[in-house]
Image 1 (cartoon, rainbow over the protein chains, first blue to last red):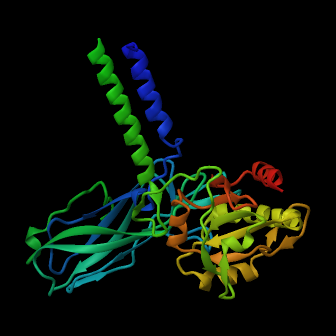
Image 2 (cartoon, rainbow over the protein chains, first blue to last red; image 1 turned 45 degrees about the horizontal axis):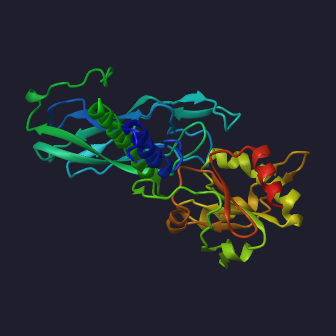
Image 3 (spheres, chains in turn orange, brown; image 1 turned 120 degrees about the vertical axis):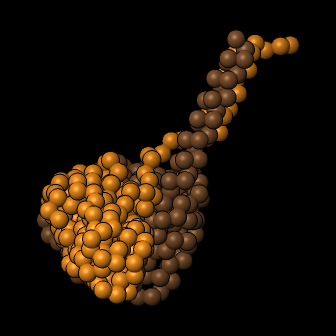
Length: 182
Length: 189
């Protein structure tokens, strides 16, 4: 006896679908909530010049992270920490203020970052800074939630590439859209 | 005709399998970084046993609650939705503990007891009907191994309702619905 092809195909498809567990909400891993990237305000910078690094955090739609100035002591703030090579000095990191938003799980608005935010790290390349292209490792720490669940805090490595020239004649501004007042 | 249908079916199978494996890959670990392959919690599946330390440093096994209905609640002190549901859990503990129910809070803070103990000892929660209360249910310090035993978590809070005979009845990721979970508890008592 020969079953029609369409029936056989339907049975096969039904078996495959039935064997799979029911669909669950898609929640990314904490480190996939933010896509970070770092840019220098001068390319190249030079020994003896001050410049900035911008850490751009692109935050996944539907998620937020606590702002650096978090709304409560118990909340984990966003921080960025540079691991500076010899010959560099960092100033006080400039964090954006954040925005107050109310979520389904809280009546009090929380100060959070959403969508895209830029953190800025003022740097000075000192007279003994190495010349050429170098990498400054940054540690970005954040804790993300959506409207229903929170993800554990994570520390993400971000690589900032900086080029240092021997004298300031070579210095060129870069990424003006990220450094409007620089 | 036959060939087209076969290609269409193959494409559907590939899409369904890809969705399945993407789902498994998005389970989080305690560290939040590495992915965990995990089984879904199926209603009726036996709850995994575990041994964790309570805030006095004593071992607590899930199996020691056999005979009780247990709501295992994965939470953290930094988690706002977890804090929102704590008063509800306090109320459930008050309401149902005499009937053979307990909440078991599994605290997932990286710093462990050093942050969880002061929180549990000092933090007062306003409960429905007036008054404030400390957390009135047992708290243990969780770890990645226990999360793995439960098949990984999507986020915090996560609550797993376990029947008197140690079977997983219901799993809720995110803020619980008080009425829904109360109804589920009552159905087991």
